Image (cartoon, helix red, strand yellow):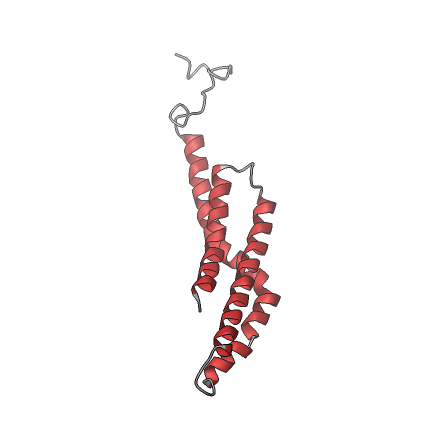
Length: 143
């Protein structure tokens, strides 16, 4: 494969964790439905584009071949488009499959962060305590 095709595949693999990082830092900016749509269609588009670039490059190499008949494997690479057809039809499944391990890590981190916010000291987390919010302090905790 050529470098551009490799770069597109690597970008498709890094799209779900990048979107989850954006979701972690600013959840209101990227709702879950938008993240799912961008993941599915973004990964599909990048893998489709990667295959298109690969087959264009293979055809270009075949057309520029000098020295008689090209090898059979070069002809097969340029003319067999079974991977391209597979990506066109089933490439939508790549996004959820690539996102699943990252979603599990995100869920674990969210659970840990949620527990530390509930059980940890509020002042250390930057959250106001009940007195600073104007709430009533229970008698057992009152100084």
